[in-house]
Image 1 (cartoon, rainbow, N blue to C red):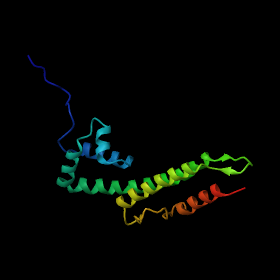
Image 2: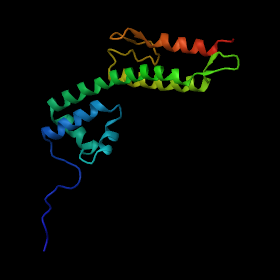
Image 3: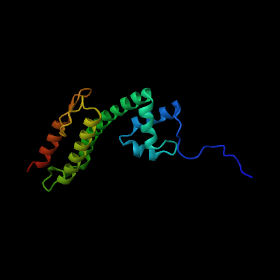
Image 4: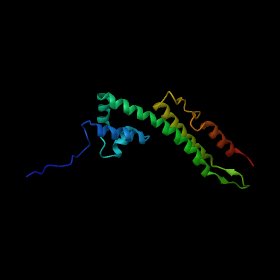
Length: 159
């Protein structure tokens, strides 16, 4: 005597707009790769299924890649937040000068460079892809490279 399952089990394999919209929404919320996003949620299809759908359904593909480009902006703004967080890492030196550990700056520069690289891959027309921190956020008129240079200069001051 077998009972019929009322709830589906396993990952979805049939394309529908509800699942497509979930994928597009989640891709726009996370700066992770598709594999990680799919593994984060039980109601997401497998990564290979999404790739099949991207090849099979042009409208879904267009919306998906447009949303992925938006992640480039998210990464860029994370860089600005990273620089703002550096203010919390300063401490007063022996003679009252403002100091920051060189390792903190090195780690921040590495994270910023990685995000710039990823942003350039996602939206090369906007982010130059050179790996430097010379992009400008026109909405806030913030030049990231100027802010990094200022922080480094302040950390190297000898009082």
